Image (cartoon, rainbow, N blue to C red):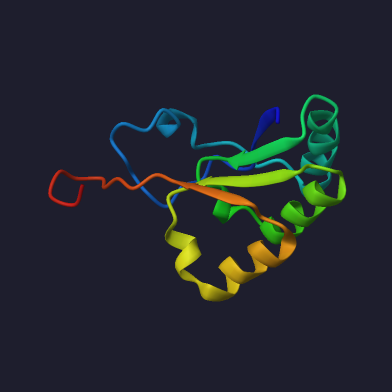
Length: 115
């Protein structure tokens, strides 16, 4: 499998001091049609995709994006996430139902006592 990555948003609901994306958290997120166009281009270069961010679970229409990626022929669709949104059973189920195959969780805290 050749895995590609697609950044869905710069927004994040964590404030990790080590985050490489911290200085990039401003700007407009890509539109849904722009993300679909990018998925099509990525599909020509690979058969797996991981959605990243910021925090990709904050992106609107995430389950729909997962389903679109699968319909474009991606064999694997992953999510690189802090996992907070996956505590919502309805969202987690909708992502699995849409075809999410893997989730890569980063478990860190913003302060030493939390981490």
